[in-house]
Image 1 (spheres, rainbow, N blue to C red):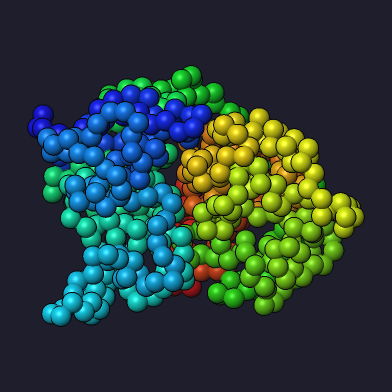
Image 2 (image 1 turned 90 degrees about the vertical axis):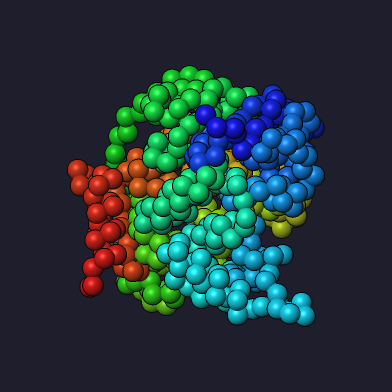
Length: 504
């Protein structure tokens, strides 16, 4: 084995009241794809931030190419040859794609002026290599979540580096985009770059990694060649116990009355016309590739994107929602696709984020003006128990939680809202294997309790696991409605891909 490019030795990181990393060792070889896995709160994000210069370790040292280094900020990490693709986007929405890619490293003409034509040409070439055919001068704020993820990849690839850290890089990508990303990873491996690949999708780990390191509770459990392990081996190490298989009992549409009846719905962006029902006691999945209309449908049902035609009935009564406030009052809650931009309130604590949409129907104006601290504290305790949220205090700032624990708080907000119709976008994005199963069980339990649940997800196995029926969209229209024996991973993917490649 050659000399490692990067060695992290006995890395510890302590925050007030929390030991996030406890003597973790990690070694990256040139031309190696090294997977890092663990439950939410296991320490993955903290270790990445230490290597990326966002956190200084409390103890331990980092060695890059044989030299001991100290990182006091991200720039020092970058100068040492470490490039990081973060799970949470670090793009500036008001700037163009090209500007974001080369921000702080802009090529300049004689006299020091920025060479904008060169920036746009180079950005266009990089975007094309990633299969992203969009104008480099387009502002980032107009991009989808998937496109933003690919811009993050392009920015990382534009730098001179010997270590690439990828934190959940496929979370918002479809299968074709994932394939292209893996081609890029193979090219990096061929160039001798060490890739640290962090993902909750174990199928990806087995597809792309050479070795895997498992973290649990801030400690390294083991490092093994990927060929020596099975998925169940990794899950057992992550959880510290065997994962119990679950038998899912599917509901049928005839079990209850319609909660939402959608007839010939159209909305801006080429959505519709769409006609379907979702029933109380049912989980309706919504599948489709990027650009299929999944996000547009959920936004239209929540009043963010006003419909341009058609009718929607809520429990038998016509409704015309013009904004999310009206939707919440009507008993409809939406979990946003991008929790960082549309979900969390970064300046508020965990409890304040949790109760942000708490139902106060029936209270007087005076009651609504007075904060019920006891009710809010009880709501926090309930959600923390149900979701096993890893927070040392309800007053902890939401941004100090791991991405997965932030997602748990967002899901807890659905319970606190007391809505009966739940629109869940990517409910397990950035969530570990054990928590994913728990969230799937919770979604099923919410349906059993009489909620109507619509789950829009790019994760096909997830839709197969939780859905009683699955609506497949393509180019803004219904490509298929699958149920019973016809609802499985293969049929969902085949229906979505067939519509995407058809000329009709």
